[in-house]
Each structure stands twice: as C-alpha cells, then as structure tokens.
Length: 68
Image 1 (cartoon, rainbow, N blue to C red):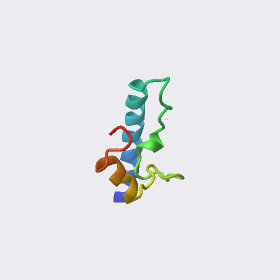
Image 2 (spheres, one colour; image 1 turned 90 degrees about the horizontal axis):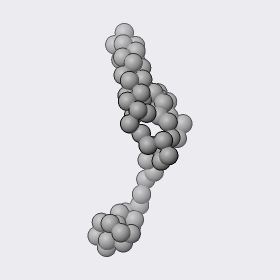
Image 3 (spheres, helix red, strand yellow; image 1 turned 30 degrees about the vertical axis):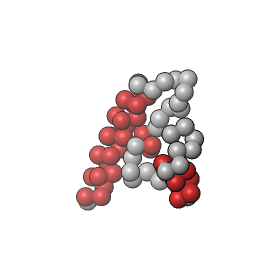
Image 4 (cartoon, rainbow, N blue to C red; image 1 turned 90 degrees about the vertical axis):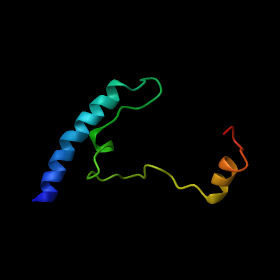
C-alpha cells in the first residue's frame, strides 16, 4: 500500500516539476521535459549520467585541462 501511494504521489509531483521545467527552459537550447524525467519510480531506458574515468577527472580538476 505504501509503494502504491508513493508511486501515485510521485506521478503528480513529477507532472508539476515537468511543467515548471518546461516553463523556464530555453526552447532553443534544451529539449522538452517529460514527467518521467523527474519520477524516481519511472523506468529509464538510458543512464542519466555517463561515468567518467579517473584520468578525465584528474585532467579537469588537477591539471586544469579543458578550460576549467
């Protein structure tokens, strides 16, 4: 019962979050958001973030390569 209630509430919350994100997005620079983008219960077919190797992180934060 608790899981069903959580899914129901996140469905509503994610719809509101998607609406707010779409209102404030730059139409030329970003895609439209869907409620599933904000819902932790939704199944995501692709990973949100790609993993970076330690070498890349070292270059960016220690060696300051790449304009950082």
